[in-house]
Length: 268
Image 1 (cartoon, helix red, strand yellow):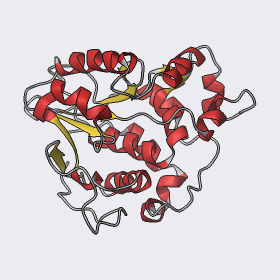
Image 2 (cartoon, helix red, strand yellow):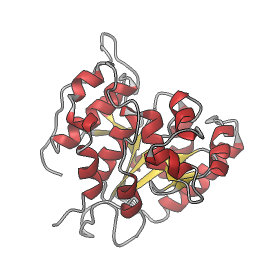
Image 3 (cartoon, rainbow, N blue to C red):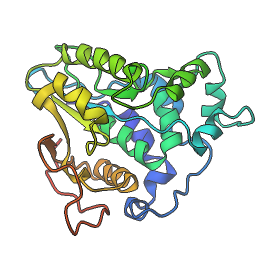
Image 4 (cartoon, rainbow, N blue to C red):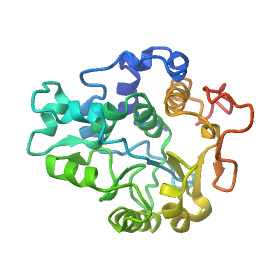
């Protein structure tokens, strides 16, 4: 089976990924602090679609939590004086792909999520749909090539990821239900984001049920460690193990919060 992994390959070629993920996972400074950190053109060509699989194999899709749009790196992206590609696209009529924007804002963590999802997603050809969705507050679930314009950024910034806010919950429920309606019964829906609180789980679990999973190794890890873990998993083609939402989601007593050793099969 020929796999379409152009997006992942482009991400792996980035200087940050070529660095030691374990060093970055320990919280040391991210060397890629400016400029483009995701190949924007590649995202646009890929359109969020991952490897095609035979209908006999269960599909696997990924839901990626959003980046913080109110921080310093978000201000850099939206600055009128910024001259790197993602910032120029943001100020253009069409906008910048959300995967490129969030990868810049969130750095290692979102970069790890998008690279991992592109590498291991298995969208179903029978039921259609994409293999990767990004949670966009105020809009629900969008594809990685969905573009952020200045108008959409205003919506993202004023929409709190808060279960009490219907401007957040209603679009997410609507889009999640649309995705769920296209999934086969034995599909897996992997949430790459926080599961310790209910801000994503309480909306998604009633819709996807026991199909909703998360990487068990995430429990108790910080964002940098999670990002480094996912990048290393892609580099070694060693998929993480997933567990249901009734498993432990917090750090166990004595757990360091640092990136653990990888385990699991070499098979996709």
